[in-house]
Amino acid sequence: MSILNRLLVSIGLSAALLSAALLSAGVAYAGDITGAGATFPSPIYAKWAETYKAQNGTGLNYQSIGSGGGIKQIQAKIVDFGASDAPMNPNELALAGLTQFPTVIGGVVPVVNIDGIAPGQLKLDGKVLADIFQGRITKWNDKRIVADNPGLALPDETIHVMYRTDSSGTTFIFTTYLSQISTDWKQSVGAGKAVKWPVGTGGKGNEVVASYVRRLKNSIGYVEYAYALPNKMTFTQMKNRDGQFVSPTDTSFKAAAANAQWDADKGFFEILTNEPGKDSWPITGATFILIYKSQEKPASAAEMLKFFDWAFTNGDKMASDLNYVPLPANLKAMIHASWKAQVKDSSGKALWN
Image 1: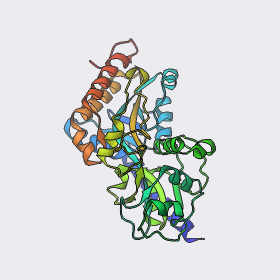
Image 2 (image 1 turned 60 degrees about the horizontal axis):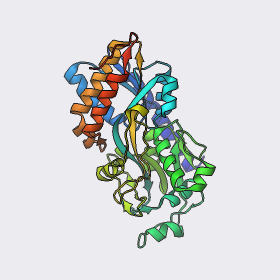
Image 3 (image 1 turned 30 degrees about the vertical axis):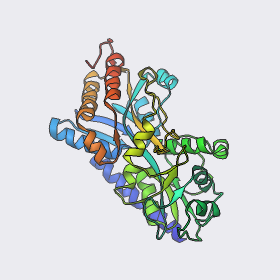
Image 4 (image 1 turned 135 degrees about the horizontal axis):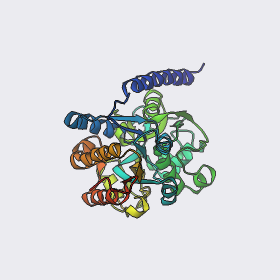
């Protein structure tokens, strides 16, 4: 068995044990709010849940299983809410009887493990990134990478590509960006929560991909910034739509989000990748909550809305501390108005006033 295969088996076993422990610890109690989905916002939902329970006594059992899993669980009515970084479009929401709203904004970042390269030191162009993930650029000292990084000592080593295997909103954001920046990527791979990757090794969840990259020299993957920074991962700079190399920061995420045109009647459907602006991070995205418009369990739904109202009122600093961008006040007001207009019990009575 090769060193790479032994490493991946070891990581896979560790991830399986961790998942089992989390599931064991995440048993819901009567009265708890239940949700499932995106791994992107899992750190902030965990922090909000911890603080909310301490203050109000109601817990949140959130399963970080990926955006695709979250959509399936809310459609099957297994949980009070689903969570996805890939927003459903207005037609999909209407057919499912769902509505959605954003909670925080963040960024997806390429992360690498190259000896001698510090966080934010390596610069990548979007088309170069697409060609790396297509297997067209296979060495770190390829002339196209070197051209954007004069003076940086890049090794004559094979690039090991890591990607998400689960149905993932992080993947949706990442592949949407690659499809916007590279015609070849759009035609041969495309955008989606799950795609057929041309090359590389897959792992389930932000946590596992981050673990792969941390352990394997000369690797590259993509994770949400909230995973990259606390784990001291080596993120890259990216060339944005205005031709500027930028680092992932709350400032560059805000710059991209400033172009958003939020519309409650369209379920707040908004894609924030490859936005204009010299300071914009090109792989920015919001994360969304999915709930039914007509609630079969109005008491549970009302408690769920109270939780997110509390988070919008009290959770901005926690979000910022975990490297997410809180929503602006005007957008929060739009979300509250959408709850009042759209979320009702079976008799048609609004659950939010």
